[in-house]
Length: 363
Ligand SMILES: Nc1nc2c([nH]c(=O)n2[C@H]2C[C@H](O)[C@@H](COP(=O)(O)OP(=O)(O)OP(=O)(O)O)O2)c(=O)[nH]1
Image 1: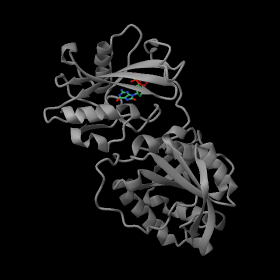
Image 2 (image 1 turned 90 degrees about the vertical axis):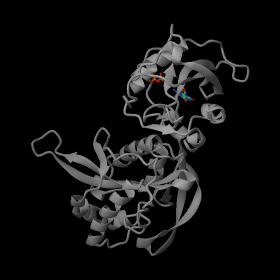
Image 3 (image 1 turned 180 degrees about the vertical axis):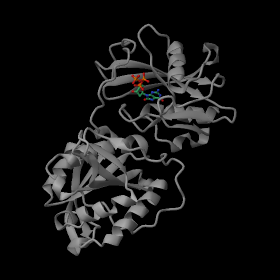
Image 4 (image 1 turned 135 degrees about the vertical axis):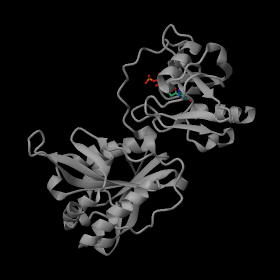
């Protein structure tokens, strides 16, 4: 169990909801678990599972014994914090007697992320009820939440801590991509004072690589690679800055499961073998945004040339002010119309940085 899951509503939910906060939380599923917002009717089960010394002693902010009323208060506070985009404290549930007529959902534990918007990071905490220990619930739930977090909330780093004597939790963090960064001390309410902990962190780069997609192959490498990176293939990607009548630029958020998930990008995609960049862009804009663009409306503007770890990206960027159809997030991706001066507020892939500066000056 990572220490920092607060189960006492000690911080009032901020009133100033962040405009980048995601929409209402859609339950996350794994092979055996569902991770969803806590509901008032979870209070009795939550209280029974967490009011257990073996669980409470590993959690920094959980009192022991845990008063029954606190479970109700805590659940109510989690809903406000989530609505404000400040913290996501969620129920981990599973199915008992799955596949039988007696099948029912049971609360297994809780998992939470608390965001520090200023630092673009969030802290992960979790616990699992004692009767569910030893079944891999922790890594299954935590791995899923970590992948969701990088794709959906504005963070570049996740942090966590675990008591020095809680090796099980330390191993779990390592399994899902966290790296140990040092030692610290945390106050543990139930222990009555400070306790030594190990500190952990992970960035987007520590996420396990997404499974390869089954899309048609990109255009073959144009050259064996630039001089600074022998052997690196060149990946040709066509991208577009769509500009609306108010001079705002469309950004799309890379969805969970893709490399660089959670970063905002110019719509577009890989140029397939035999395609021109313009044809690729027209296809991608139709597939991703349901709009029709004529080739004559694509104005070449600039290009990005950037060395990623496994390939070198060559990405022409076009400007487009005319299209037909309403811009629609066909793949469920988040979209944002952004004023050129505000583009730098959005975390984008490193290749895009020079393009953002050029657009700001040009538009
Ligand atoms: N579309 C787009 N891709 C970008 C930008 N900046 C940047 O580094 N890239 C990189 C991310 C990816 O490595 C690559 C685009 O590949 P992708 O996988 O998203 O392309 P795709 O839409 O064809 O995706 P898929 O069908 O293969 O899943 O280019 C950008 O602003 N827009």
